[in-house]
Length: 344
Image (cartoon, rainbow, N blue to C red; front, side, top):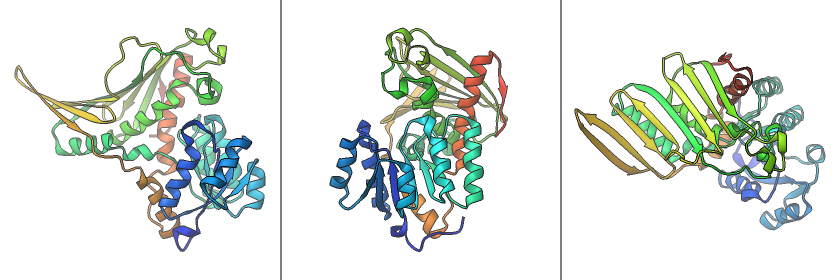
């Protein structure tokens, strides 16, 4: 994409969603401000939350509908901080108004939604990306260095997992139809990590799920997310990946990700990691702290892409890869069979 702006300050940013959970609207606007872009507008249905935006960013425009913002504001980059099933329709609406778009992760719920967003953005000549700031987590940056060093040998498998026995909450993330399912929240982070580590084409996905245990106790009843879901991803290179997110495991596994290679294994959580190698009957365990995350790189790259033509790191095609896996895992679990991948 050719640069659209002479400098980052010309990129005027609107956020859709200024809700109270994690205060993500404020965080996004602070991040774009630190990257040299200009906070311009906030869209929020909750009047109390909307009233906070001018306190956080004096002079910012405030709206109660995205339609009004698109009609009246000169914001040219829109960040969507909304429930998962709204990402695609809202993004398409923004793209039709020739705005650049950043979606909170996950990019969308289905592969078809991703395809529609990519095609629309290409036709309109605008950028669409997903806020995969955890692409720059210290844990995965360290893992990439360990793999590059050869200490693990050839990768055989990657196992990603999170969760424990805990009833899903009554917020929208507990709804299958709104969130996409249990794999779509934390799972998309773990998949994005894993896809950085496995340099190969996706060939097949198998999904498994258990539903109905927590549902009677939740607000969402039959629409409650899965109690546990599990995906197995086969790659052309022969490497395989497993992903498990659970709300029923009484013996949760430690850490987030385990990488098994022919020479050693790597385990990590957010703060620390272990490298285990074995020589005969002797195991060597090297423990370490992960380097600091570099989340600021995400919006720095967006600003550089739009103002200098620097290549986009989190392209929509890259963001589609984990969604394609999740979509196929959902379909596979429902159909009881493995499904071939359409995108590598």
